[in-house]
Amino acid sequence: MLAPILAIGLGLAVLPVASAEPDDAGQPAVPAPGPVELSAPVSGDANPAAVAACGQFADVLDATAVYYGDFADALETYAQPDYQDPAVSTSNVTGRTALRQGAGVTMSAANTPGLPPEIANPMRSWSWGATKLLVKMGLRGGGESLNSTANEMNNDALGVQEACAAAGTHA
Image 1 (cartoon, rainbow, N blue to C red):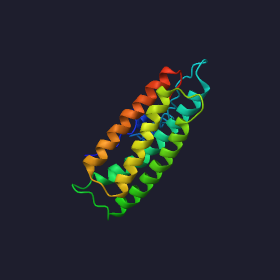
Image 2 (cartoon, rainbow, N blue to C red):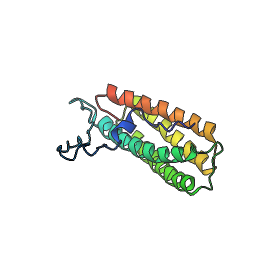
Image 3 (cartoon, rainbow, N blue to C red):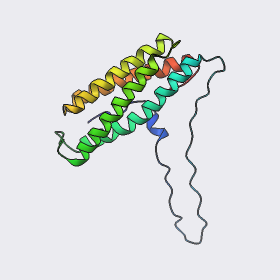
C-alpha cells in the first residue's frame, strides 16, 4: 500500500545479519558473516563542499528511511489508517520527528558554501518534500497522499545521489 522507500538501496545497508544454529549439535557452528559496511570511494579531486553536504544527506536518508518505514509498516495493516492504534500513533510521532530533523539538516547541507546547484537544488526539494510529508502525517493523511509525497522525495533523493556521484562523492 505505502511506498516507504526514501532512498534506493539504503534499506539493504541496515538489514540485520541473520544466523542459524547448526542442525547437528555435533557439527561446529559456522559464524554468521559480519555486517557489510558499504562505503563509496570519494574522488581525490571531489569538491569538499560536496563531500560534506552529500555525507550529511546520506545520514539523513538512513535515519528517515528507518523511521518513516516503521510508520508506513504500521499503516499497512489497515485498509483505512487507524491513527488511534498505539503502534501507528507512536511511529507517526517518531517518523515526523525524523522527517523534521532531516529536513532541517538537509536544508543546512544544501546551503553549504560552494555546493554546486546540481546537488543543492534536489536537496532543497527533498527537504520541502519531507516537510510536506510530516504535515500530511500530522494531519493523519491517507495512503495515496502519503505515497505521492514519498515518491517525489524518492525522485529528489535519486537526483541528489546522482549529482553527488557526478561530483566524485556519494550520498
